[in-house]
Image (cartoon, rainbow over all chains, first blue to last red; front, top):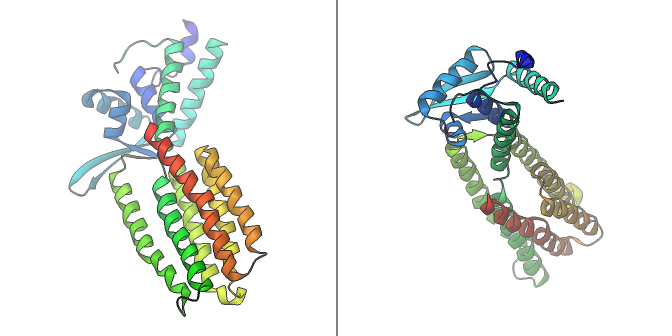
Length: 95
Length: 192
């Protein structure tokens, strides 16, 4: 279990890892899209997005599409680096 | 999806699943434009060839006015798509910049077509081939790659025939390079 120390605790969580993996392949994604793809509840997703945003792993932008408020997320350079480190640590753990 | 302790295999599974989800959405692209422009350019080319060959009108190039409503439809459609989109991929940006650059190049070629003694069709075919080939590589869709190659080949043929016959070559090339891959892409999009 000591090897788990190398795994970023912020990413070593089901939903946060799913959000990061999804955003890695996209330029940006709206909250509703992430919710649909991860199958998470709006409340839980909101909390996890907030944690990733505070760590500067993702950028969250709030805007209006017509009259509708829209939250858009995108992965940051820090987030990409953290994700790469996480995958490398995972590889070491497996290997 | 809930919060719980992850095993390494679960982590890998989540990463794979989510990257696959993003990839599936990337593949949903573009057939509308290939079909719209495929039909418009095919009608334009064959129309010009028939009008010029049988001397049906003193200004056969009038047929190309069909590109004006097509351009308007393209712009409106892309604006609607952008408004409705809940996500954008890196490929979306590359895809639209690529075709915007090709469109700009085609416009320049059309402006100076008289300097080329109206042999511009071959260059337009080469530019369209470039866009189709790169789109095929981006979407990892072989019919578009082959379509791009067919358009390049028709560009070479077009350089060696007269201006009117270039339209016949262009019309056939568009069926092979745009319309067939466009319908195959539409079928593929329907599967996702």
